[in-house]
Structures are given as structure tokens and as C-alpha cells.
Image 1 (cartoon, rainbow, N blue to C red):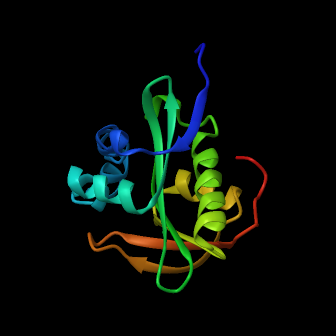
Image 2 (tube, one colour):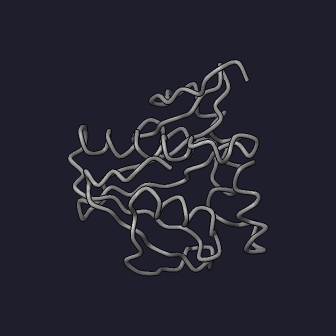
Image 3 (tube, helix red, strand yellow):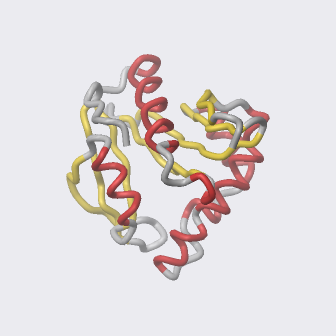
Length: 165
């Protein structure tokens, strides 16, 4: 490839690339569930901009191109909710998702005082579930997304950094 992928905090200039990448990446999830109304596909660009401004958002870059992203914020119960992790399909399977998760976890712990992390994955999303378990997340329950998709809820304590994915 010639260039290495770097991980950094997102800026407001990244919002449009994050929006487009998210739409591309979550097509496979939508197909898996036969539901093209899942939250990442119906989110507006303005909403992505608001998340970049308010939340802890990281991007993976290959040169100037945003090829991955993740978002997190500390929820009411003190757990950091992490979501919308995505990596461009051509770069999946190279550890970028795990690197993005580690960056978000570190920032949420250091900057926002998170003591544990929570994320959700669709019950049929085996690749995502495998990644989350590999980096130390454990299933703690289930929920149903606003879009009707059954979700698996996973958590891990801050500082529980598993082996690299």
C-alpha cells in the first residue's frame, strides 16, 4: 500500500467523510438484517456533525482519506457508550477496528472518566461480535434497536485491554 493508517481525533472537517463512510460500511449490516432503516443509514449529516463536535470521535486515515471511525460518549450511568465503529470494506481485517476501539477507550477513560465501556452489535453480526470479544468485551444482555434489530449488549471494564485483534 505504501502508506500507513493513522488514528487521530476527528475534526469537524471530517464529518462529511465519516458520514459517507458510515453509509458505505453499514450497507452489509442492513443486508444481513433485511432492514435498510438501521440508525447508521438514516442518520443525517448534521447529526454526524453534532456528534463530532460533542462526542469522543476518532478516525483512521490513509493519507487524507478517512477509512474508519468510531464514536463514544459517557452515558448517564457512567459507562462509556461506544458505537458506529466502521472500517472501509477494502481495509477490514487488518486490525484498524481494534486500533480505533483502543483509541476511543483510552480517550474516554483519560478525558471523560469512564470506568467501563458498553457497546451493542446486531445478533447476526458475527464478525463484529468476534472482534469485540477478542478485545475483551463480554455479553451482558440483549436489547432491541429502535429499528427492530435484536442487539447483543457487551461490556468491559476500563483498563481491560485484551491482546491486539
